[in-house]
Length: 416
Image (tube, rainbow, N blue to C red; front, side, top):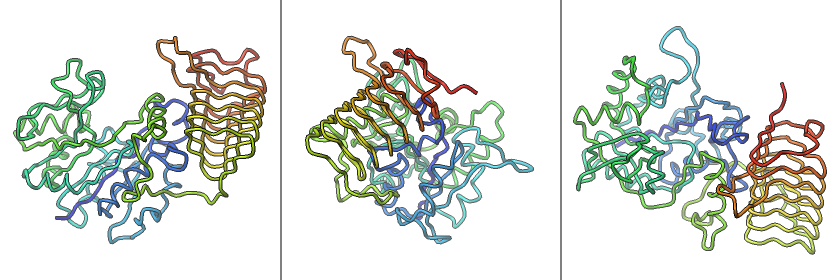
């Protein structure tokens, strides 16, 4: 039984604000040394799946550069499997920017069926989790399913933001509704699907002709399958999985890494998360610095008197004398100058936080404490205050900051 994986990696990720202004959501850094896309790619190869299609769309340059030919994941295999990257294009007919998840597969179906795979494993490229897909494939075959959907239990509040299923005692799906106001259950789709290829081919061709369709799996394809009486089953998953689609969920996923014990263990040597990484020297923590419950990546320097707690530092981060970093995520080559304070914040690449500046703060009395986010290449002046849950857009230089700083919840954008 031959399986081809298709990873949908074209999402804009607009709810991540400044973090996706210059990159697709799957290309956003995670846990200091990884990108979000690394987790699904590693799941594939750790599951023995080496035939992978990657569909991109929004700002793919950073993602393409990171993945390259797929060597870190042992996917540089040319035409005998391996990794193939496909981007939308304008043609004379039947080609355009993807209108939805189903349309993305329809436009690339010629490549999907090349070599006659039996099953299509459709995956999102923007979730953090570890999963062996082989038991799910076995479940699919044992239940003689046309479609199997990976599922997990969520809270009632989360259910209102996800695709929700109702099943019978055999795990057969009897109802599916996207983002319901009144969920029929708390069993949620993880956006992981196994289709029989012939069934998928027929459904996509039919859906492409429907003018009333949004060409989306959750909104159109799955409800259509149920209305036709096709065999749709729910595969139960009990491990760690998170959609890092908002600043808050992205930040909380990092805090899960620092929990005692970690809720998501990157040190599991039986399930290595592969990535492309730069060669950097070991991290340097100088005499008098204090580091607690943090992940510090190669090339980082923590100066004397600095304090880093419950934070994740990417390669090349500098934390100056007497500077403080609390409950924060700092991307590659950030610089926190002497006496500055960063608290409950996410700071993108190549940002300089000036002397005695303050970025973010924690207010336990606030209804929503919020996460402060700083875009790529920002230069924050000395003594500047960036408030709680504020956002600063990419490429803003010191002279563009207002004298009073950026207030709580305010967004500072670069002027055209």
